[in-house]
Image 1: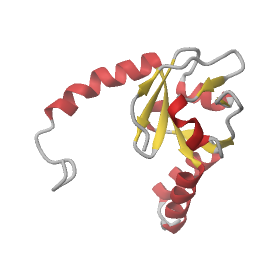
Image 2: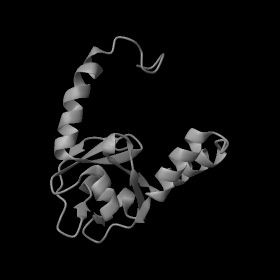
Image 3: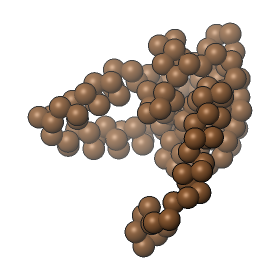
Image 4: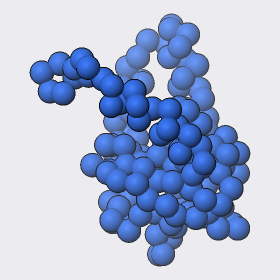
Length: 143
């Protein structure tokens, strides 16, 4: 499970240090792809394979399934962190997420998300109040 908020910087070669506490889990490989709200999703290889199987089972006759799968897989990049725990983020993904230097990496349960720091702060400013105001159960019987 991925938790917390981290503030690594992107270097001039487009590399990002993964949070130290997750390096071992991600050392065997990971997949970076486009996420919603212009962030990047980082999946451990096993989780990406689970998602692949779920999308494989979805009906390709549904337009939204085809569209989502095309963007999700076409933008995906499999990476292996280097010995210092850095991963290279391909230029098209950096452009999609607006990544320049200051980044925010958040834990989002089964994945990490990489955000441009300013975009994350704006998102959080908009969504924190809505989160605080939720008055009904998000997950019935759990939350």
